[in-house]
Length: 489
Image (tube, rainbow, N blue to C red; front, side):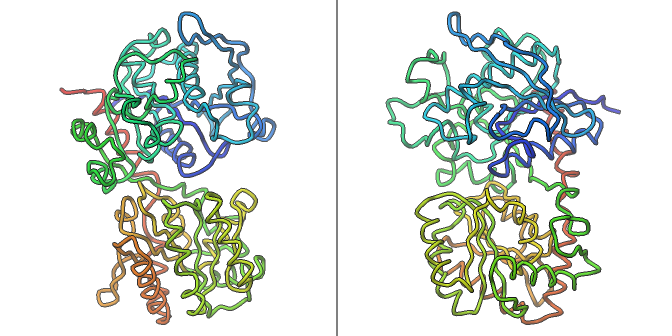
């Protein structure tokens, strides 16, 4: 029997302490699943003092005024806090007032690279103070991307991890550094090797954390098999497809899961009425309650279509806006909950005002307590993404019997199987083209099948029966960790 592993998980956000998207859910749920498999794991994340409730999460200050040297001259002072995600699963928080604690938002600084360079070094300092001799350091997305680089090239805080291997997970390749990679002129781009600029050098903001991680990590993975294939192409590779091709023998795809304890319609306290596969009839009670709560007419016959995601181009919001009027003509009700692009939000608010009994927009920040009620109440879930590394929302939607209509890309391709009424197989509806016609046609197909009550009920049950927990992905990650430890053997 293989011995348990010692793992460090490093992420810019970890639910329930901080969250802007799916990264936080993965950074919470994967360590919990690994812990249940018997492995020893610690989590490291920034301390966003304006966002984290110290009393609620029972956080404890464990070390103060720790000096972290950035080079031979510059230094910063940090504090370390500790909380627990579950019993014997500690979460360590790095506090610095200037870079993290005084901020009311997680991202959005003009100096994001500077912030997360300090986070990376402070994380290594913390590991050395804890004397946690990890087997694996798992770095999530660009925010932790310098860790593999430091461990490969040498760092004063890396001695404790001299035997450790690094795994770098690409959650979204579009995010490679603190701002958009395409804004940097070719002559100023970071080529991923060589010494880092001085912390006060403006060039530090051009350093590509993700590129350095891809070049330095022992193992790289993405969050779905399809996305792994896509990022090797120029179309989806975000200017990193060449170096990814060079390292594709170390590149893997593992689909995300969802936390079945968090997302469980049988006992979810956020629902009006709990239900399961054997009590599907209760789902309509949640629909009626949701309609009344958000100001829509209580109408069981009207198809209620939901979209819960960031309101951005990536999520296909421009396509959704283009088909709003046609959807209204189909007598559909539409609820969109999310924050994001100001131009998209302005258009959603206009539609909300023009069709108050048909279209509702809600801010996620102000209404996130309604998230699972929306899945429970809605008939159809939309996610027409331009690109989607994995997608968690469609998995949650299926767990609640909300039928997904998605674009056939990335993790959506891997998880949503097109329903075929002739064979009675499939768990949702998908489409290929990134255009309004393809999206609208897929929605129409879903609405046509919804007219057949028994067929639709069977589709709901099938979606709810899908196995999308973290149990299988966690085991795949353990196999990946052991592959990293074996190296080229």
